[in-house]
Image (cartoon, rainbow, N blue to C red):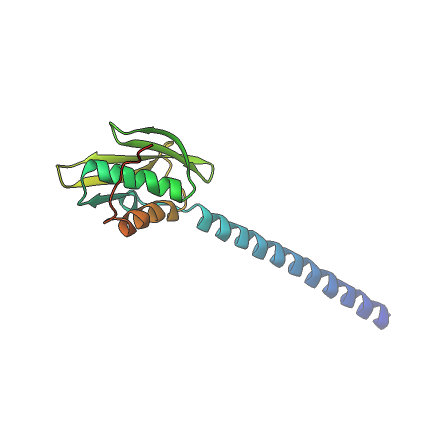
Length: 144
């Protein structure tokens, strides 16, 4: 009788530990998935998507267009007169707008087309870093 009770208790302890181990591993996997999804698409502040440059409108527009092209973003539409560039990356569309403050200062702003700011914060950082690195580059006309 004691052997049977002892064997039942041993089996019960093994089953309980197996169930708790499998639920703990599933919780760890779900936490890992959530962390990865949050880092992939986290909230990006509006203030991180706008920057003021001491550049004329035309030069900043061409630098923004060049940044979108060199970073591999798909350029959907562009209007040079109004300073609008619609790009697509990571399955979402963004409006990259260049707005003149005065003759020597211009704003560069990135905003999502669906007004949902849950996207990768590296997208505006990459664009602004490209413009910062090529700030002093000369804009040349291509002659064919």
